[in-house]
Length: 321
Ligand SMILES: Nc1ncnc2c1ncn2[C@@H]1O[C@H](COP(=O)(O)OP(=O)(O)O)[C@@H](O)[C@H]1O
Ligand SMILES: [Mg+2]
Image 1 (cartoon, rainbow, N blue to C red):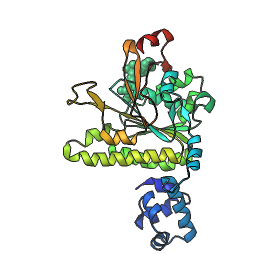
Image 2: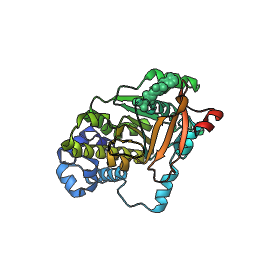
Image 3: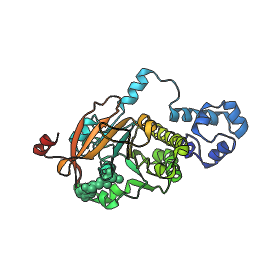
């Protein structure tokens, strides 16, 4: 069941059940069906159905909007600091809400560390670069370390118990479970003022389970569906979505980097901003923006320390840039 239905105005578990058994299992189905038909099939009253449909269309943002309304919505956009000024700068000021930011890199490139850092900084007040919200962390690889959250939070002078209490961790055991956890986000994010959703990693279960050419299109369809759900979530609740992705070697690449992001065009199109991570000299990490609709392709060097993500000292950065 698509739990997004529970996020709709005026829909509790019993109404959700009625809608689903009447043949409206998704928010989309509810939004586009004639109200008369929904009334007849579910036995719900006219006003209730109208209210539910309005809420469904809002969640899908499927109605026309004026450019001014768009502008007003964009003005609500917030940015979350990564802890590194340079990395924030190439991201246009930090990881933004109403968008999906994808961090791509090899094992050990720092993806999970960035996700854990953001899980702390997202809770900071706006003036410290935070989003003043709570966090959902979907962990598909079992690499989320609560100790690390405590460490980073204490270094920032925050109450580590309070910070850890505001991070809801979902350990996804396979791709179907991962999808289920994403479906549940629509009601969770509404109830808990969630401002950051992390999926680390978006793709590993899919890659592991859907092997071979004949399963590729099914895999891509599912991935597409869930990335779009995440984007819809980001827009509906003005929150930031961060996903991580692996690289796969491309034997056809004779020139340049033989490693390219996994997930093909689907990942490339669904993610708003893509950031490539790789190891730099002397333990540093280098981030590079790729395929962004408006961010230039710039690079930034940062380091991973006990305190989390940080800038390299001036003298070092000059050399590695
Ligand atoms: N407490 C820490 N202090 C300093 N560096 C750390 C700490 N914890 C992890 N790291 C660094 O982070 C790296 C792991 O990065 P990680 O985010 O797990 O990679 P990925 O998720 O891309 O595979 C380690 O190799 C180490 O260099
Ligand atoms: Mg990782």
